[in-house]
Length: 215
Image (cartoon, rainbow, N blue to C red):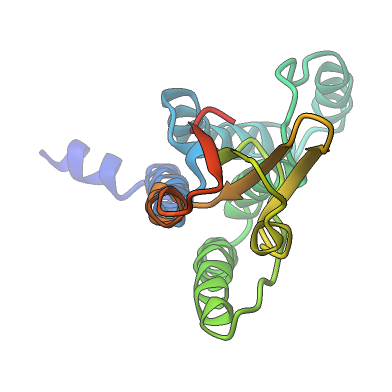
């Protein structure tokens, strides 16, 4: 019984537990804020394991120059083969690695860094919701950030200025000879797409509508 208690109270066990919980909370924060690229089995495992791996490596090599140099050489060979889809995803990986490295020195700094990452994730989401109430976007949509977007393609018999003025329009095509006007509009949520579709269906000039949620 005493050996189990001493094991639970071991500094490395405490650090591993803290890092695992921090990685899990950070990942869940991303998913909660609509970053669907993080909502996979692989990202869940990565966010839990990566800080702990960094902790173990740092704990082993911090007092041995030869091991430190060897690890630098190994890391130059063994690297992520899967391409990172966005700068933000890369920053998250660096943040997880830093959590593990800092945990070998200070638990307080580890907690502060984890809180900073979580606050920034929720802060951006909160600021985005507030800015929308004032018809202002703090960032633009991007198809290269690894996130899921909802797109709507509409064809009309006449030019529709209200679509051209829409802040979410990303592409349009005019063929006046055949009276074909095409618009492509992106949405952040399925609800926004469906509400816009309902309004578009009421317009007689709309010829057809095509929705895509795999962009």
